[in-house]
Length: 164
Image (cartoon, rainbow, N blue to C red; front, side):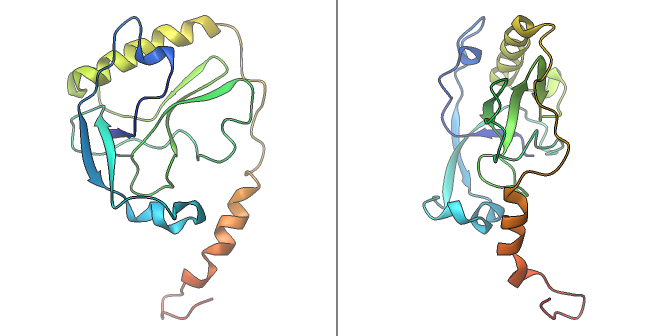
């Protein structure tokens, strides 16, 4: 995952208290990976992002794919991440039960002020879920992954360039 979250802030308490999160938005090139998926027809060439960290190293990972994360009553996306290898809407920061899932990697010293405020707000928010473990545990892949992989079959080639 990159150093930024994508899009407008969601209407959620983690952007309001205890610290007001007021990002400075930038327009970044929409990652090529976003266009590989069927729901990408209306994506712009550039997208609105806000920096969470300023490391420039783009370490970290996606918390979860966008499909099937919000279908549990104890899981929520707090912000999607800007990710050059995943799909549009992949979870950058989420909550599942009493777990805060933070996909960014920089220490606070390399976070933007907005990123630090967002992180602190997330920690304060997750406290109210103390002792409330996740209701659902993943034991296998979601059902959409095989469908998405099937759509990519014509793009999969062997080392000689032959399509499988």
